[in-house]
Image (cartoon, rainbow, N blue to C red; front, side, top):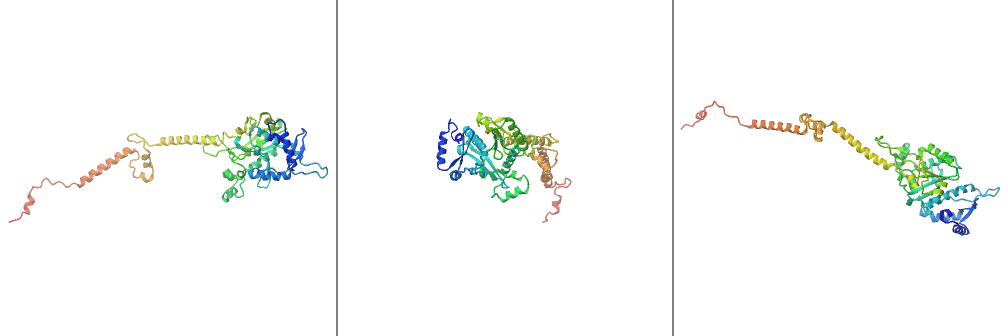
Length: 403
């Protein structure tokens, strides 16, 4: 608590005085005195209840109560084997806070995540630091007391939890997910269970997860990370985008992956949590936390590459279409789009005339045909000319009136 609440102080007198005052009110108790004489303090049942009333209305989930349990034969306090681990968790939170990642009330420990089968995966530490570019981060602190494959199992559980639907999900979505494996990938994250507990991450994928290793050797850390990368690939690795622009798209789809970063408590303490001490699974170099959580080859790159591919595909299709454009056999000009459509569309092709000529030549043909038709019409409408061998006035004498 001293490291977390007063990270810049060289002594813990103020913290101790406050803890002693809380102890007088039966709100906290000393669980253990470590070898370096540091005391491990925990909430009493009364203090736990007071903390829940104070914090949970503000949206801050509180960890499970550490109950006092004693060995019936020896009378020794049980469960103290977790105290070194608890100290490592608090030290990790202190280093994050010291680096400006997370407010004091932005840290929560032992937060449960219930799976569909009822199993509860508890995160050692949950950090909310939106002002530092980390809206939410789950942390597992490992002192190498667990097998590497157990860490893979934890990663799998967080991945499964991120794919759950809330109990009041719309029936249409529930039926969709039940209908076929992998259908949850088509359900927006806003409609999933994890968004009821945590804010948007601001990046693609599920809630990010960090493994912080403490009190262990570099060799053990390297071996563990290698197992995480290989055996846990299904859960942290991005997928290829499903698109017909396969060759043009190198971007990766992180939407269904758990972003996983790793570091050690010793690196955090030596260089600071805001230094380049975090390594993203699948990457070789260490980066700052926010850089490690980014997806430079993710959806933003996909949008740019897709737009370029679509534009290039449009240019290619236009070039291919232009190469197929007919040329007038009479004047050598290319057909306009209108004329091309006239000779190919069924409803206009029957009256398109000579399909081997362009629109202008066709118009000339039509004009000539119309002129010829008009001339024929006029010719037909003219009265017949008189016969030249008829004598003028001959017929008039036949009907002359006699007087």
